[in-house]
Image (tube, rainbow, N blue to C red; front, side, top):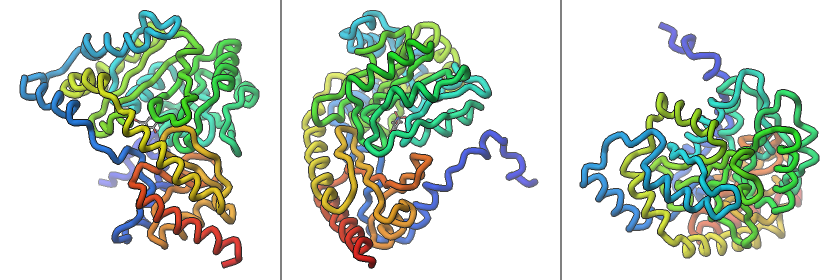
Length: 377
Ligand SMILES: Cc1ncc(COP(=O)(O)O)c(C=O)c1O
C-alpha cells in the first residue's frame, strides 16, 4: 500500500521543511553551541515537582472535568479578576497554549476565513490556521517589529475573523507598547473583529513595560491564551489556559471534550503550586542573558534590543538568513533562519535560554562570521 498517497491534503500542505533542513545540517555536529532551543534551560522548581508527584501518589490520575479542575480555574480566574471587565472570566484549562490555539481556530474558523498574523510569527500560527482551512494574512512588522495598527487595519477584509497578537513575541522578543496594543485592539473593536492574544511569555519581560491585552480589552472582544510551559519550565507537562467570550470558551470546551479531553490531571494539581511560585530569580537571570547577547551582537549586527521572551532576531549579514545559518552551523553554532518564522528570509533567531558561557561563545563565533562576510571573506 502506498501510504504516502493516503495522507490528507490538509496534512500534506503543512510544510515543515525549513526547520527540518536546519536539523539535518546540525545532525553531524558533535557538541554544538545550541542557540536554537525554544524552552527555558532551568528545571521545574522542586515544590511544583513535589506537588505533581504527590498528586500521582494520591491517585489523582483520572480524567478531570473537561474544562479543568474547579480549584485551578478559580485560581486562574482570580489572577485575571484584577483587570477591569474580567471579574468573572470564563476559563478553560488547555493542553498547552498549543491546545488553546487549536481549539480557538477550530471553534472560530471556516474555510476561507482570514486571520491576521503579524510577521515574524510563532511558526504554529500559520500551520494551524491552514490546517483548519483558513488563510493567514501576514502583516509585515520589519524592521522594528512594532505592531502597527494602520498596517493591521489595511489587512482587514470582510473575511477577517481574528487578529493574532503575541507579546512578548517569539521569535523577535518584541514587547508591544501599551499604545500600539491599544491601537490594534481599537481597530479590532471598530471593525468588529475578535483579537487573540498569546501571552505565554508574559513573565519574561525585562524592562517592566509588558502590558496584557486583557488590561486594554474586555472578555467580550478578546481571547486570552496563557501558559505554564515557559514560566515554570514545564514544557513537557502540557498545560495552558484560555479565557474570553463565554460563548466561545464554551465552544472550545465542547471541542476539547472530543479531542484533548482534559489537561493532564497531576499537572493541574501542580499548577496550583506553580501559581504560588516566585520565578523572579530565573527571570532576572534571563534579563542578564538578554543584556549579554544584545551587547555582544550589536557592534556587528543590525539588531533590535528584545524586551522579553528569550529570543533575539538579528538581520543576517549578506541578506540571506539561510546562507548565514548554514555558515554558523558549519562553525558549530546552531541558530534558526527567519524563514521558519516569516515570509522573509532576512533575519535569524537566537534563543538565549542557555548558559552565559555558551551564549558568549556562540556570539563570538557569529560576530567573527559577520566581520569576515563584511570584509568579503
Ligand atoms: C508564542 C508561543 N505560543 C505558544 C507556544 C506553545 O506553548 P505550549 O507549550 O504552552 O503549547 C509557544 C512555544 O514555543 C510559543 O512560542
